[in-house]
Structure formats: C-alpha cells, structure tokens
Amino acid sequence: MKDGSAAPAFEAVFAGAVEGASLPWAGAEVPRPEVVLLNEALAEALGFDPEALRRPEAAAWLCGAEPPPGAHPVAMAYAGHQFGQFNPQLGDGRALLLGEIATEAGLRDLHLKGSGPTPFSRRGDGKAVLGPVLREYVLGEAMAALGVPTTRALAVTTTGEDVMREGRKPGAVLARVAASHIRVGSFQFFAARRQHDILKALADHAIARHDPDLTGEDRYERFLARVVERQAELIAAWMALGFIHGVMNTDNMAVSGETIDYGPCAFMEAYDPAAVFSSIDHAGRYAYGNQPGIAQWNLARLAEALLPLMGGDESIPAATEIVSGFAGLYEAAWLRRFRAKLGLERAEEGDMDLVTGLLAMARGQADFTSLFRALGVAAGGDPAPAHALFADPGAFDAWLPAWEARLAQEAPGAAERMAAVNPIYLPRNLPLDAALTAAEAGDLAPIRRVLGIVAAPFTRQEGAEDLAAPAPAGTPFVTYCGT
Ligand code: AMP
Ligand code: MG
Image 1: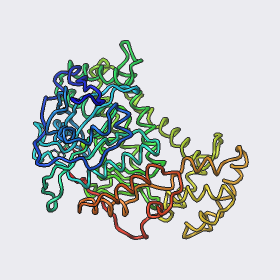
Image 2: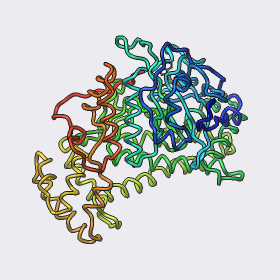
Image 3: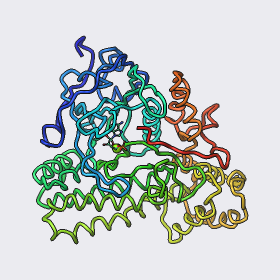
Image 4: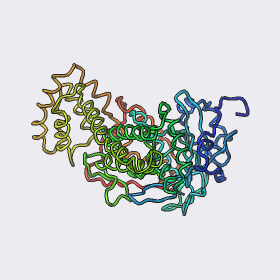
C-alpha cells in the first residue's frame, strides 16, 4: 500500500494466459463503501495487513469501485447448463476477478461478487444484497472448518445503497478467494463457439494452475481424470455432512474441486435423500441424493467440451471411461467417509450394508448430524441419546449389535475418532436465517457469533445449542438464490 504497509501484488495471470476469456472491466461506483466483516486470518494468509484492509482506501477496492493498486480487474466468460438447459453465455454478470495473488499454497484468485453490471449481466442489475453475501461467507467458513475444499470469503463491504429485490435490501459486495474460478462452464463457452485455440489456452492454464505435473500429449484426458477424482472426493465430503449445494449447474462446478457459488444451499436435518430446500428447484434435480449423479452428468459435459483437445470423436470411448470412473471413485470415497463416521478404520465386507442399514432407518426421522454425534456417545458406552433420536427405536436396537461387533474388531478410541469427524455445530438453517435478518436490520453481532461457533465445529461450546439442534419437526424451510 502507499503508506508502506504489507500488501501482496495483484497479478493478471488468467487474463494474460487465456486471451479472449475475459474482459477488462471496472466495478460500479457506490455511495458509502464500508467493510463490515473481514476474515483476518485469511487476509494474513494472503499477505495483507488486516489493519490496512480496514482503511477507507481498501473499502473502495473491496467493493470494486476502484481497482486495487496495480490490479487490472476482468469479468470472466463462461457458459453453463442451468437445470439441464444449455445457456451459451453466462459469465461474470455481477462479479470481477481482481487478479491473482501468489501464496505459499499457489496462486489464489481474489474475486468480487455484487460489484456492478458487466457485459455479461443480461437483465441483472449486477448487484448483491447483504443477507445472501453473509450467507456465502458463513457457509464457506463452516465448510473450511469442516475440512471441505471451498472458496473462502475475505471481506464483506456494504455499499450504502439499497438494492431492489423483494423490497429494498442493503447492497453489499463479497470479496472471495479461490484456487481458481475456472468452471466446467468456462470450457463449455469456448467449445460451443468452436474457439479451439482459446479452449486449449484455457485447458493449459487450468493444468498449470491445478495439475502442473501433467505434461505430454495426453494431458487433457489426464486433466479430465483429475477433475473427476476431485469431484468424487468433494461430493462424498458434502454427502458425509448432509450438505446440499442447491444449484449444481455446470457453471457452478469448479475444476479445482472447491465448493463454489453458495446460493440456496443448506445442511439437511432429518435424513432424506429427496431433501431439497431451494425455492427454484421444483423438480428436485439437485436434491441431496441426486448430487453424485448430477456431478457425473456435469463431468460428462466437461468431457464433451474437452473432446476437441483429446483428438475429437475418436476419443469418445476414452472420455466415457474416465467419466464412468466417477461412480467407483465416489463410492469408495463415500464409504471411506461413512466408515470414519462410524469409528471404523479397517475395511470389511459388510460395511456398506451397515451404513445403508443405518441410513434407511434414519430416513425421515433422525437428524443426520445429531445421529452421528450421538453414535459417538454410543461408541463411548451410552447408546441412549442415539436411541432417543428414532421414533421407532426397535430397528435401531436391532442394528446396534452388528455395529458393536464391528467396532470390537477395531483399535480402541472409536468415540474420539468419531468426535473428530462428526460435527456438533453447523450453520443450522433457522438460527442462520435469524442472524441474517438481524444483519439486514443493522446488527451483525448474531452473525459474528454464528461464525465464531462454526469455526470450531467439533468442539463443545457454551451457549451454542441452537446450532447443534434441528428445527422442530415440520418447520418449513426454503432457501432462495438471493440474487
Ligand atoms: P448464479 O445462479 O449466481 O450462479 O448466477 C448465474 C448467472 O447469473 C451468472 O452468470 C451470474 O453472474 C448471473 N447473475 C446472477 N445474479 C445477477 C445479477 N443480480 N446481475 C447480473 N447477473 C447476475
Ligand atoms: Mg454461479
């Protein structure tokens, strides 16, 4: 910064490496930018002095009104299948890539959401409002604390301007950080236009960013295989936590394997493969239990887009085999995670049946998160809390001896192992909504409290019961895209 305090340099790696994939653009001016939430630990990890990010000059660039010193912001182009329908031109309609920052862990994108209209805005106003922006902040931090690959929020800046949604809402801009914002839809954009030179530059750039060990002629199909592996791991991690993304369109799937674009997402409470919260997902396309199948469908779209680089139609069988491989990789990752949730470290024949038997019983009754936490207590010798979660505990009592017999084959310490992978606290739907409502009315204390609790999801904390318990049975809950 001008006064000499620490600030990392902004690079323009994507814009330089993939010509034609982004447009230089500036954010909208706003009346009164004010940083209301700052992720100090992340700021420091990026090389910023958090104090410097609290100064007015920083608020002006964290909301996009001015470029950061030395940066050349761009809006990124992408296409995407939205609810199964191909849209050849989406792109950053209310977002800007400020640039990349070099860190010990590699390059990190600094990207804004809500920074004003761009040439990709279509009919949107380019803005974002405080509630959904804070929601993305909280969900991302919770996922990071749970060990799930995710974009992270750096800051929330209010703009001092009201934005029209259902009524007037306080405008805000999210500054977020990712290993990259390269989406399945980024490849689809150039494949659909048959711009194979740009497609190749994009793929080579993505490989340099995420899989630099891949070289040689076959690097595109090996890159596809890597994305398949990362998505299999990611979706298994979501499933093991009851996370429902809500809009798994191909433009919301990152090739880095990070969870991206938190919109109408939520954590499931009562276990139910058909669970859907999003107000726009009428057909349940993105229901909890559909997520693995949808991920594979999206990966098939990535394979199609990469085909011109893999030698065209002749490579269809190879590409198909790679995408088909998702099922086995996902199942292995899923079983590994659910074994761990049950305290099991070894792999035995009947484990899949043990897990599916438990989930079948829980369906429609037991809160998913509480159940695994209570099973940890059962592993410590007290099955009563788990027993109490079932309306029909007879089936649970019948299941229990098989699990106990299986635990007897394991090293001691199952209760401790389970407590380290089964969270107590999540950003539960109702308390999170209440905190967001308070924030929109000007009180950020409840959101700061939620953030503090979900940052340590495995550690018992005083007075945090609301984030450990499900809503009373029958409480309706709907999430909105909040655009
Ligand atoms: P999303 O559903 O947030 O992933 O957005 C899908 C597409 O719509 C992306 O191209 C966004 O940039 C664009 N978009 C969403 N909301 C707005 C908005 N308020 N103004 C302009 N574009 C938007
Ligand atoms: Mg999106």
